[in-house]
Image (cartoon, rainbow, N blue to C red; front, side):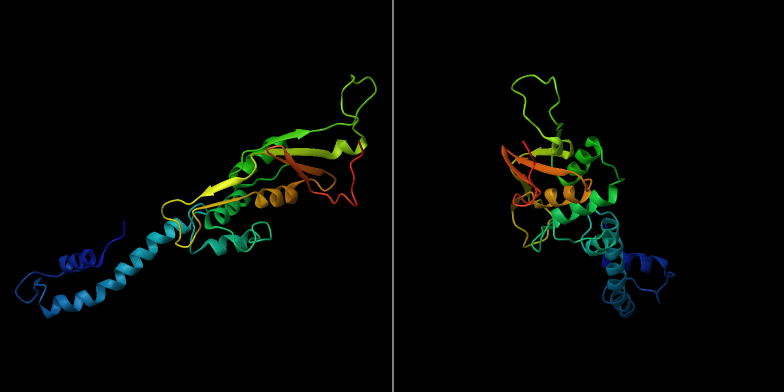
Length: 209
């Protein structure tokens, strides 16, 4: 907790000599002069305390744009109406990302964004496969599916900036961030509660059966 003006006034008076010419009376001119100075010290102490929060991306507010700029954000993933919580989540995810293409890495990255996902990989059908198995073509060797809940719900928390919605729904950031991280030669299929969307244009790119 930052020191208040009253705290600084008491501290300054405690540094003064004692005696009749160094009064502590609130009505004394000397006290009034000190009282005119201490709001500046109190404001600086408050700003210093605020810097402790802005120094960490998960709690940043005023310095959040600086964090975003350093990490190549904001980008079209979140759109123009991104909430403060979602912006922080993107910053944290990118700041803590060490790089990688394994399933464990991608699952951990999504978790940093606030999404719980699972990843399934595919393989082309091979001679000797049992009946009833999908007739996957060669392109399925480069396809993988991300499964998650239908939409991520971001609840507003105490301390959030006024004007933020109480809750937001959407997974646009998840789609965009995973597309950015995915190997260029692969195709992601997104499965939200049984509804799948893929990242390729069906009029141009078609996965053979």
